[in-house]
Amino acid sequence: MNWKRLWLTALITFIFLQLTDFLIHWVILEGVYEDLAARGIFSSAGVICGYIWVEILMTALFSFFFTYIFVKGYEGKGVLEGVRYGIVIGFFWVFTNAYNAFVIIPIPYGLVWYWIIAGFIQTIIAGILAAIIYKPKQG
Image (cartoon, rainbow, N blue to C red; front, side, top):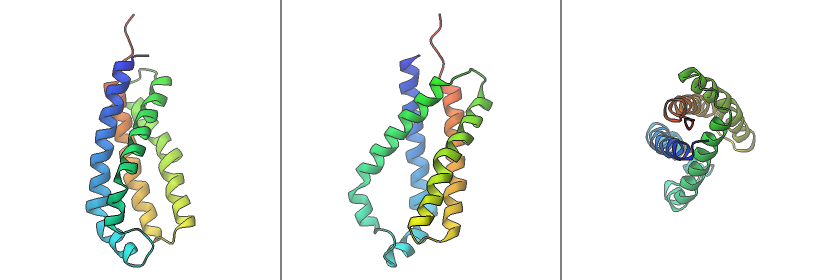
């Protein structure tokens, strides 16, 4: 296992996820979340910002384990390996979490599909990044 490449891949995955999470949740879906906060379903932006460190920590953990699992199953098949991995993680993480949230939180059904589509795009691109960046040790 090439630990330097693993950590580099995890770091780039983390940065990518943080940037795209900001775009998805603070730009694209901001109005939806504000409406849900006004109805008492979601926390306000101010409350969320007070706990942003938790989100950052969870994204860091996810990024490391996303990369670690990729590396453990690494086959060296290029970008398509990353796409396949991203799809698998999308079903494992994104799809199940979006539907679980729908079951326990009174959110609009359309929001579930925003999360699923955006999350699959994120995991597929992150998988592609992992396939491009990670290289095993030579020799």
